[in-house]
Length: 222
Ligand SMILES: Nc1ncnc2c1ncn2[C@@H]1O[C@H](COP(=O)(O)OP(=O)(O)O)[C@@H](O)[C@H]1O
Ligand SMILES: [Mg+2]
Image 1 (cartoon, helix red, strand yellow):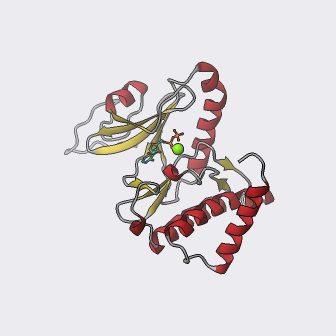
Image 2 (tube, helix red, strand yellow):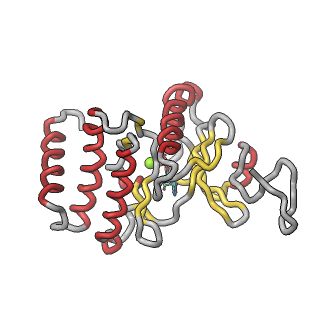
Image 3 (cartoon, protein in one colour):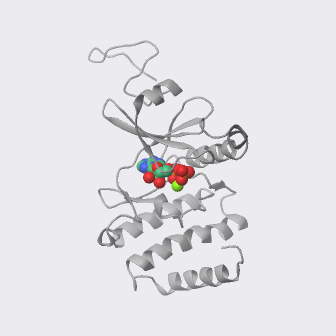
């Protein structure tokens, strides 16, 4: 809800300090395209306006068949998962929805763990990453794509952020399926922790990772 105040100009229907609300505004505010582009993935845009930044996931350029099937499904799942995680620090929030095909998200500055220096992947970083993943699971959300390094960021203050909930599922908190799938996320995090800080895993964490790796060896498709 916007309120007029004497030190803030009032423009009916326009809110230049909030996130862009329409596709045209999203295009005007785009300063960079992030990630890869293609007919079977959303265009990810960096938006900048009035000193603020956002990320837009824009499905308009996908082929119509993909957009109306998998694209629509991914967009709906990402939006639902992020709305469930609204109060979790280190996860993007849905800042606006610009029409049917564009989701506006909080932008995190920082580098992904594939590019960040190993020295920054310290105990405090992994503690914050594990805290996000635990809170996510407590709300019934599994990410399922944490083995992708680009989806985990190290922020300038050393804390973690988790992005790209396009493969996430919302399940019943505490349910059996959730517990089973949560192990995929947990083993993804432990894999990075062991790589960056060999010897830092507890006996229980080592056992979880060993079990996950045994299962992966038996799985013929990966
Ligand atoms: N909230 C965000 N904050 C910062 N960078 C982001 C954010 N969301 C996406 N990105 C950047 O855009 C890239 C692609 O976005 P992502 O959501 O992973 O889409 P895709 O479905 O194409 O993998 C990411 O790898 C990251 O570099
Ligand atoms: Mg991604």
